[in-house]
Length: 382
Image 1 (tube, helix red, strand yellow):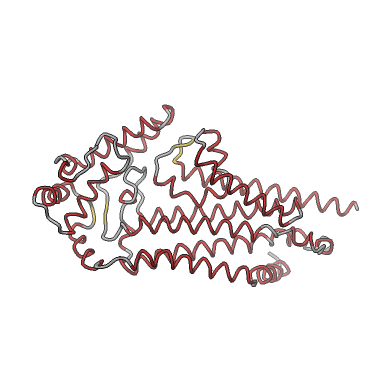
Image 2: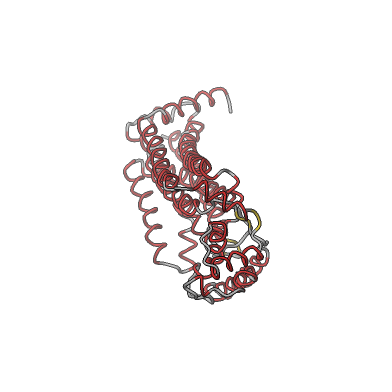
């Protein structure tokens, strides 16, 4: 970038980011993040003692330990946290997708095989779910991915706090995308509305100026994403430590593909959100440039997001689902895809979501480039 371009970038960053909207939204996201996670950490009475008890069996989940814990709780009615935390894992076989294969309602009814054959029971139910819930053409791919899952799973004390913490991140990511939608709606339209675009078109660095305008929006969205993610992880880690991030994500959602840890799942959520921000920023830039009206651009952006949030709850047709996955708002919901076992085009759905949003980013960038070129040529002809 030339010296003039760098100066223009700094001026544009200052113009767009040093505003009340940005300041209040940054503080708002920070307050919401702290508030939601404060509810988690402030209700953990006796957490230190519980963590010490759970640490007895931290690391790889071994079937012999599960069997010992089941006998202690089921047969001896032990209330020790070290044993009940292990039996909770066994309960996942029954309570995740309840009524499928394993239907016991009480720990007292759990057979020994749930513990000493835990991983085989898990595979049996997973295979049943795949054959019941996925189209035939996707079943073989799903079964192949299932066989790639490595056992034993890992578990570290306090992982269950992330049941709620991950949902908190997802909620905040939705808010962030709406904030980015409003912020990005005026990328170009504000200059059309105040008629300053007529002057900008005559400058030597007109095209550079057009591209630079998108960067503050992307920076803003990424900054909000980092705040939401890092503050959440920091607050939970202040209670249970960072080691818990090495726990298998299957402790959160037992019947999932891959060998992700909780930390890796959070990284995928954050990456998907950032890709969604890139996609949303450029597509909103296109709407802003084409409509030349901020309110119209806002209407289009918000309508698309609401269309996804409502439509995806009621429509499950594959062709429509591919369409939904191209809407940037879906990137905030990638946790739902990580927690399920959906396959699209032979690819795990979280990767499909990121791929489709990246394609939208490329297409909207190309569309903007074409429109900048046409606008320049039209201006010179006039």
